[in-house]
Amino acid sequence: MNLNKKTSLNILYRLAFIVGSVYIVTATMLFFNKTSYIYFPENVDFYTCSYFTDTEKIQHNGTRMYYKQNGKEIVVLYHGNAGSACDRTLYASYFDAHNISYILVEYAGYAKDNKKPSRELIFRDVDNVVNLLETLNYDKLIILGESIGAGVAAHHTTLKEPDKMILISPFTRLSDIARIHYPFYPTRFILEEEYDNVEPLSRYKGELLIISGKDDRITPYSMSEELYNIAETASYKELMPVLNAEHNDLFIHNEVFEKIIEFII
Image 1 (cartoon, helix red, strand yellow):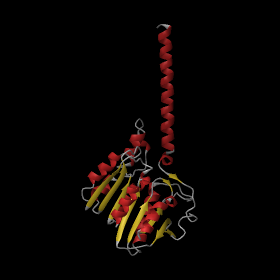
Image 2 (cartoon, one colour):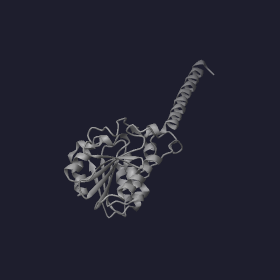
Image 3 (cartoon, rainbow, N blue to C red):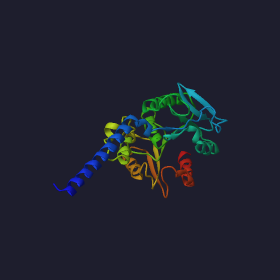
Image 4 (cartoon, rainbow, N blue to C red):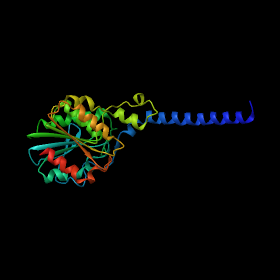
């Protein structure tokens, strides 16, 4: 073997070792920090949220919620994986303006809660919301879920089916998202928590509105199309594409809230 060929092989071996090491280190980080790649809670205090001064701050069986009674329609909001319910003040302002009652659910592990967020605990929050709803007087129940909250909302429908459901930037399954963003890793073995919107929507019988940005690179618009097609048993369904919108800028488009309010009332 000549010197040049031997040198080239040594370089290839070193490159393979570096690439393999980076792959193993990244896979290890994904495995041991998997929930950190799902949940991004903000450490704002639930009880001192400055916006909700005239809204009841409820703790029901350990689940915290902002509740306001405005009218006979009530919206339950399950927010996305980042921030907190306190961040969703824009929703509340629109609901207030149109005399719509609302519950903004704060997840376990968020807003200075000492627990670690998990699907198990968040689904327990849903159980508590359903339990609270049994004590309230309303004519129409609307469930609204955004991003990962769409998976929470979909789970809600399996416990208590609403009259209407709104999904903002939803996905088919969380594992599908993981495969998109980490295509070279065995995500089915790394990802322990699954949120599945496909199965609940295939059995949903109420009215459905799906809103998604056409340029969404986190939960692609094609997933909203797939969910729309899966919801064959819905009594009414509508898919609203938002042009020139990505995952986190939907609400700079006025037509989004206009459509939400129109659908609710």
